[in-house]
Amino acid sequence: MKRKIVKGVIGFLMKVFFRIKIIGKENIPNEGACIICSNHKSYYDPPMLVAFNKRHVNMIAKKDLLKNPIMAWLCKTFGALLVDRDGKDIETVKHSLKILKNGEILGIFPEGTRNGMQKGEKVKNGAVLMAIKSGAPIIPAGIKGDYKIFRRVTMTYGEPIYYDKTKINQQDKEEIDKLTQDLMDTIISLTK
Image 1: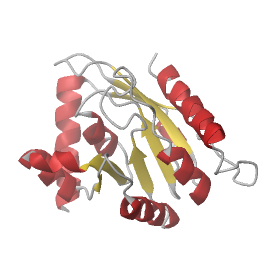
Image 2: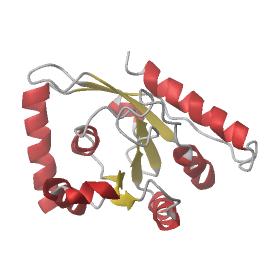
Image 3: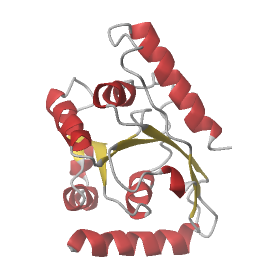
């Protein structure tokens, strides 16, 4: 109940202050597992992904957010999966795959950090690997706008991307890196 109320309040405030517009909601399945992958511009991105989805989105977030009391409270309220970006967090991966196995939605920012590509960060391939392992489609999403008061922010969802694990060598790093870059290119195309 608390989660629904907080989600409603966040959605209302974001609509008022950022004139949120959502395009392509029909690309998010009404049931079954999927992974929403978006570009990452701002601290407002995760609340927007959560607040403007009918279904609950299990976001993967960095553990550093717990240093901020408001972010820590939001992470707890929405059950964010906290990951240590400096290392391989096997428990978070296992928990993520369990979420997908249970037919839920997982939210991931492949850039790994805000404006990661602009900072020269390598795009993370975890989303593609989880999609291949779980069989869940990736729903690419592009966020356009700068979260300036009373200026429009638009989120556009693209068509689901399916990976056939029988045709992909998960051990081939080059192949996985290419699929990850293709995904990021699709996400960027949705921000235009």
